[in-house]
Length: 325
Image (cartoon, rainbow, N blue to C red):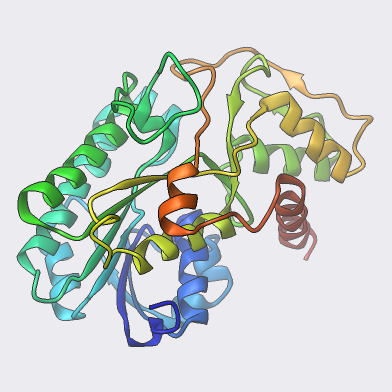
């Protein structure tokens, strides 16, 4: 199916988000016919800045509105769905959990129910879950056979959405694949509270980057192009009974502390004179989270194409053009 995306009619939710915008680029390059669910027009989004918005059909509406989702699937005769739409900011979820739960949980079951009711059309559904769905585990790295055990609001929203997706496969046979990724970074992320864009912006301004934690928190950092292509690979393999209904971790499998990540960016940007401002003020986040991608390697034949430095070089170049261009 790799060379058949030109035959596919694809719905992408969350298309104005970081991963969504790069997934749209990958799909456009493969000739897919794309419908994007867009809540608010955001001229700063890469989807708009790149002009890709003019190459897709747009359905305006919220994930919480079931009728909008069913209309998008039915009217545009969608056969492939990538569900990336979510409230994705951990801090925002902690401050105000209700809208996060509404979007991430209700939005997911609305999307899945729309696909179930349009089974004559929908052949494959990829759900973007997260490493956060695992919650706090006694052993690391996370593997897909571990229970989903979120505790904080954002984690719980991802655990719940993940389990609901599995339920729709096991109960109704919906052809679902679930992707659990680490912390995705790349050009187009304008949420400056996140460590990669915030650090790059600070160095470009000649300022010390702010580290909200004590710097020892450990995460996977996953380049956005690898993430988008991982979603495509999963969709391409959903014809396989061994893949349908399964969850897959996607990771570079090279976890770093926050300060280690900052040091890599510092080296790549020749900003050694600017020491990070470590605030040690993180609330509601697990200290260490990272993933094993062995199942994706074995069942999907997937491997990342970028290491941390090559992904960060592309990312830094994007932000230089964004600020200086």
